Length: 97
Image (cartoon, rainbow, N blue to C red; front, side, top):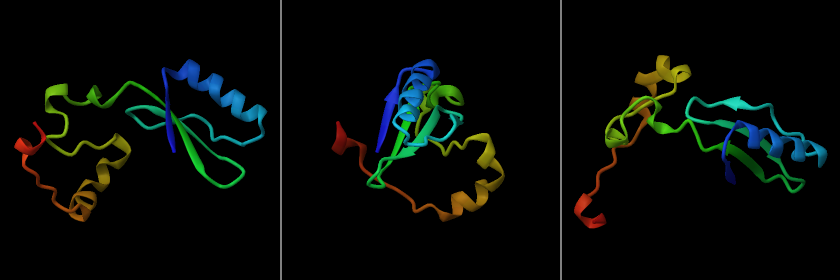
C-alpha cells in the first residue's frame, strides 16, 4: 500500500513517526522519480511512503509521457532484457475520451 507525501522534509517527519512506533522503516531510498521509505505493519502488510516529486517528467516532456519506455539510470544496462520481458499493450484511445 503506497502513500504520497509532499517532499523529502515531510517524508522524513513521517519516517521519524514510524521509527517512534518501532516499525523499523528503511532508509530513504532514491527511486530517481521520487524517494521512498518502506515498512511493514505488525500484520505483515508492506507500506510505502513516497514523495510527490521530482516526478516522471524529469527525463521527458509531459506531452510525451507514456510514449516510450523510460527507465531510471540504475536499470538502463538491463533495458534489452526488460523490454523483451514486456507484453505488448494495445488499446483504442477513442474508448477513453
